[in-house]
Amino acid sequence: MPRILAIANRKGGVGKTTTTVNVATAMAAAGKKVLVVDLDPQGNASTSMGVNKKGSMPSSYDVIIGNTKLSQAVVWTEIPNFSLIPSSPDLAGAEIELVDVENREFRLKQALGKEAVNYDYILIDCPPSLSLVTINALVAADAVIVPLQCEFLALEGVTDLIRNINQIKKRFNPSLALHGVVLTMYDKRNNLSQMVEDDVRSFFGKKVYNTVIPRNVRISEAPSHGKPVLLYDFKCPGSQAYISLTGEVLKREKELIAC
Image (cartoon, rainbow, N blue to C red; front, side, top):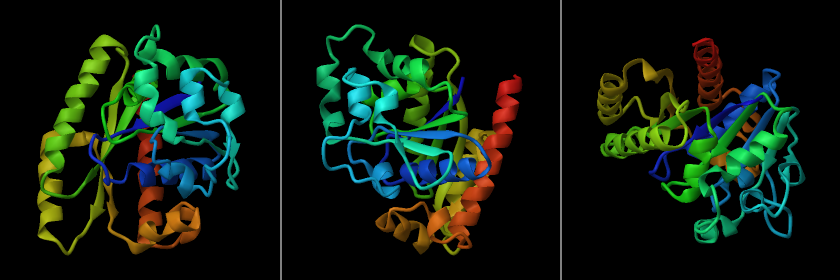
């Protein structure tokens, strides 16, 4: 069975999608079979991989609602070992549609459990809210990776998310773990970045990855070309940071599985 990692933060613009697609790319390059599930109605992960979301292609919305099988929604990318289930704007209304559905929090878990056995890793790009869609992701996941932007109010939002994770763990998914916190948009020229890093490492300790993701214009440019930054500019600081982060993620995976 695959390991399922949700990339989540209730705050938008912190690097969830960028982290998802680039860690997935690095995992695929390391020989892992990876599936990315784009659960954000904005579909940024799909756009970042050059997937045209217009038209009638099946999406993660159809998978959760039960309109289609997981295998029918999979799109292969240009990267070997890397496939994607694209998003749909319809995800924004999924919560209303699922209100009266039995076991509504387990829809994604059930869909993945039936057909995802051929993957090593499934990475779920969550929307920036604690909606029923996000709850589905956390119920399905083995662990959560939290991207955290190096800004003043960053910790406030993350402490709320950790509280939510603990609630999901207590009610629906006892095995759910905090995989780690990754500091993003780090500017070494800015004292604020260092102050936030110190606060986060003091609060979360070893759960914070050693690798920090720098502010890097190539990371910002890559999605407009429909590519992860690892393909857009492999040698840039952003790409090298994501390669290092993925190494940490895989190393921590071995430790978590061994526990």
